[in-house]
Structures are given as structure tokens and as C-alpha cells.
Length: 211
Ligand code: SF4
Image (cartoon, rainbow, N blue to C red):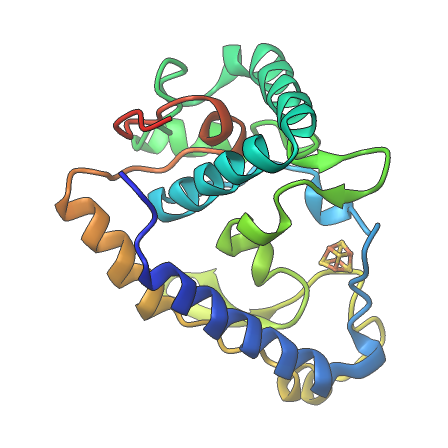
């Protein structure tokens, strides 16, 4: 299955939203190439992220095959190191959905570098194809604060010493409905469930293998 054409629209909306939030934030937002703290730790990605990463990998294999092969080696090393404790199905890469598996995922591979990170340069090898979580990390965004409550969260390196009003004035709106409609569309076509980046780069993750 290929990446839905409307994903480009989603990415464009998110990029415009980030650019606007960054303009308002000015020096409060310290994201820059080579800053990699947010590239450590493991988070769940949906099947839309998976298809975007796979499209990015395909493009990289064509444009820079050696770099793609190195990225695949990093992903395989990641799975070799952490796959044994993976709270889901290590054969497909799909995360488990029981309460116990979700609790285990909270503690899973929290210090592991993302396999897409080139440690030598501090840059992401799949930056244009990165998951939505990476695109909205940094500026203030609405997050789940538990029990149905919402709160503004941002990278701990940003907005150091800023007032809550300053933070609120720099909120980055996230088009969650647009993303969810695309994820739902994939679900209706039989693609559902969550995984992590390493599996998306190497394995089918329940996705019909399309190269
Ligand atoms: S989100 Fe935080 S860790 Fe990531 S690039 Fe921005 S400042 Fe650096």
C-alpha cells in the first residue's frame, strides 16, 4: 500500500503551523540542526507514519543507496538490542494493546537513539519523511494531561524561564482531525495498529510488502 496523496496536504499544514509558531516564539524556541535530545527514546507511530517512512526509505535507496543501507543496519541493530523486550509482536513490529503491554511500553527503550538519527552529524536521515510526533515536538502543543484534561506541553529545552502567557501565545495548532481521517482511511483498508520507527524501516508491520 502506498502513502495517501493527502498526506502531502497534512505535512504542508503542519509545516505552516510550525513556521508560524516558530515566528511567534522567536528565541524561546531553540530547535536547530544537530540538537538531538528529542531523537532519544521510543514512541509509537501510526500506519500513516509507517507509509511515509517507507516512502522515504524507498526514495533514499534510489538516491543514496549506501546511506539507506547504513540506516537499515542501524534499524536492525536497534531491533537486535531491544526487540527481545518489545511489548508487542516482534515478528510484525505491531505494539500490543493490552493494559500490561501499554504499561511495559512506557518503560521501553527510553534512552535508545532513533535509528534514523545519524550520530555523526546529529541529523535525521529521513527528515522529510519523519513521523508526526517529530514534527510537533518542540513548540507548545496541546497534550493529554490525564483524566480527559488537556495541557500545553513543550520541549524542556525551549521556553526556559518563559511565563505561561508567553508559552500560550506560541501554541502550535496541530491538525489532529486531518491526520486521524487519513489513519481511519488506512484502517478501513486493513492497515491498523501502532509500531515504532525501527520496525517501520525494516519490516512489514502488518503492511502488505510493497518493496
Ligand atoms: S525539540 Fe528540543 S531536543 Fe528537539 S531539536 Fe527542539 S530543542 Fe532540541
